[in-house]
Amino acid sequence: MPPCPILRNSVCVKVHDDWGAFHRYWRDDLGAPGRLVAFSKFGARPHAEEGAYLPGDWLLFGAETTAGECSSQLSAMRQE
Image (cartoon, rainbow, N blue to C red; front, side, top):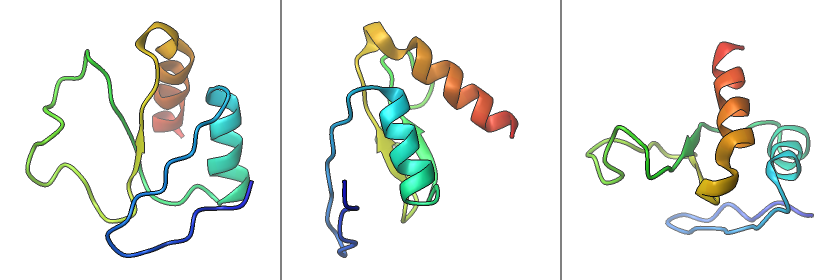
């Protein structure tokens, strides 16, 4: 899957089959560019908080019912 072009003030949306497919694409194909910002209905911070996002951030959305794998993977990544 080719990477999205980097355009100013644009958003590229890609849908992956599962966390593993996304993580391989982000890490291996793209070299882990930017921060991953995961969204959850259980999040402690409002999504529109001033300064919450930085240029180059990756916004990660997924089904709350299957978020367990993603949550544990993100926690492990924070430890690295």
